Length: 259
Image 1 (tube, rainbow, N blue to C red):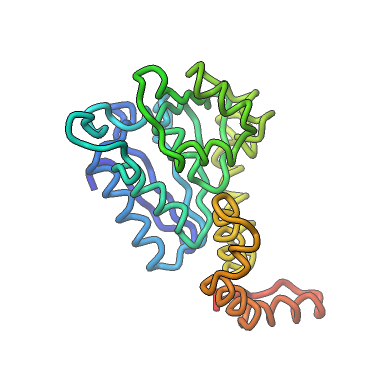
Image 2 (tube, one colour):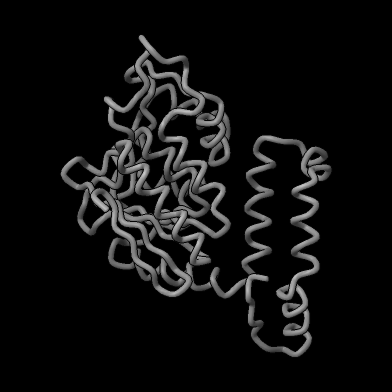
């Protein structure tokens, strides 16, 4: 692949943003490569994927390249614009996606990290949501991803000022799950990933699905959703649920198989 690198470590996958010359700005080819990588991770039943930049990159992701934005002379206000492909792929990925951030994140890069499940960062991490700088419209999906991370007042401050939010405040507001030194960032990420891998993948996948559903639907709508009810039944009747209960009773570590 030209703009990313991938690595498989048993049930842990790593996706490296590898477009340093362009500050890891996203283009259509890079987005397609990332979607393809997640397809492969899912085929191999990868339980956790870490998205990261190269060491010392400085800029984790500079967002979507300006020339990749829809053309207002040709396109309507975009609901299914190019970046949505990878955002929705991350959100639909059955495993857990961790963004390991050791640099600044701009514009569409914030959308990318906010689509991930867990964010860990170093003091070099910072965030700036910049559509107001170029009068770019955001659709409700984009706004909602920010609202899932912070309250509406903080979201509006980020949108309206386009100011940089540095790592300490991002951790205080809950955008970053963990804030550690650059030297300890990879160790923390690996430890967190391994802890998740040791837990039941079906239950994690179900909860992730429900969290995303709750962002856009009522509890009653989700409860009555046929696919959701079937997913709950699948987890309830699974080998892993039986194994989890039995291991608890036997005071041993469970052996989950994802079925």
